[in-house]
Image 1 (cartoon, rainbow over the protein chains, first blue to last red):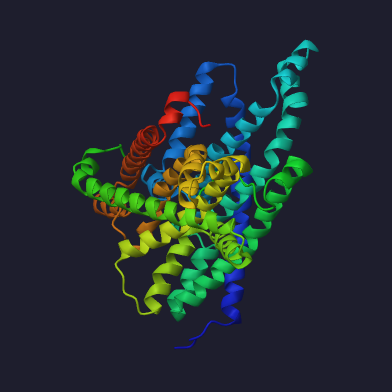
Image 2 (image 1 turned 60 degrees about the vertical axis):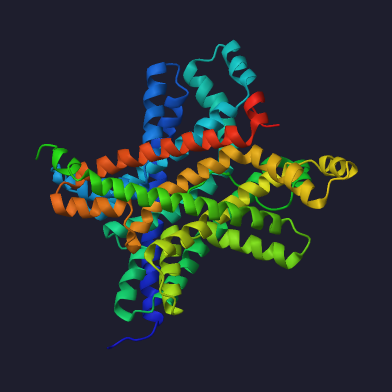
Length: 234
Length: 226
């Protein structure tokens, strides 16, 4: 036995894992964000076929656990002859997951832009693309920002599932340490604390944005704390 | 490149059925406990006692800002280091219920917030007891309003229960892991249980819809909450 207690080296190793958690979150947010943007646009498309097809995609992804999607990518794709690394499998699964949930959040934001705005843009003879990009989206982005920041918390938390396909991020580096010193309680408490340190500022930020958007009247009318999106995955 | 072969996977269907049954039991028990915890904590957060309100708020923030996987490991190893040897299923239910409770708290609080003060005053004028006021004027109307959000959250909880496979609870995902290592057909296996989860979530939605129609007849008649 060389190491028996949790020490600074372990903490350093965990922080290194935390860095990979952040990298994976960023990949998921950027990749998933791009996909979600397409999903959101397709969900408000004038073509019924496009709407139904993306609606089906959203239902499929939202109806199955992220863990299963991850297993499918990591263990399933190689048997079909497609080689994937743990990072690629985790990044791709998270992208798929984010595209469905964030896509729905953004679709709701686009549809929440008042109807007269769309009609006014049409009366001004703006093209469909101009109407979307110059009139609707700028307003939708303002509506979508607080729930999007809130959803980033879900992304960070869900990167922990990449540990089960062997990607060494925060949760996985904790398991590795625990296997060598077997002090699960302390190790997992420290991991939880690091996750909390990443997620809590995002939660607070999201709430602030929400309060600012709601304006002083509503913020005063309801209780001072959170108006986060009600739907969020553990 | 191999061809897809579902037959070898599907012939183990009794295993999948067993796994799905464990998933359903996990989800149901955790939903019930989570709802009770959530309702109590939502009431606690709105309480006049600053300490109680703080404690409930802290619980919600702690749970909502850490991953379920880590929570499950903490409960699993934490309880055993306290000398409590519980079966994995019980540990999973505890972790899921504590997790769901935090999300249910936020949702129920939004429901409680939506109850108008004048409704309470009216109920008092009608001479209802405190318990009656709470039950008929606060709890049920609040639940009625947040029912859709609540049910979606519990469907997500059922999906998240797949994480319990990591502490060797023999639910659907754990079964799939056994099957795929037996048959060397991971792609087909995970597609099958993916479909299984979609069916389960549809069944759960259907169940909640039926329960809603039963619990809130007014909603059924009006087509919307009050």
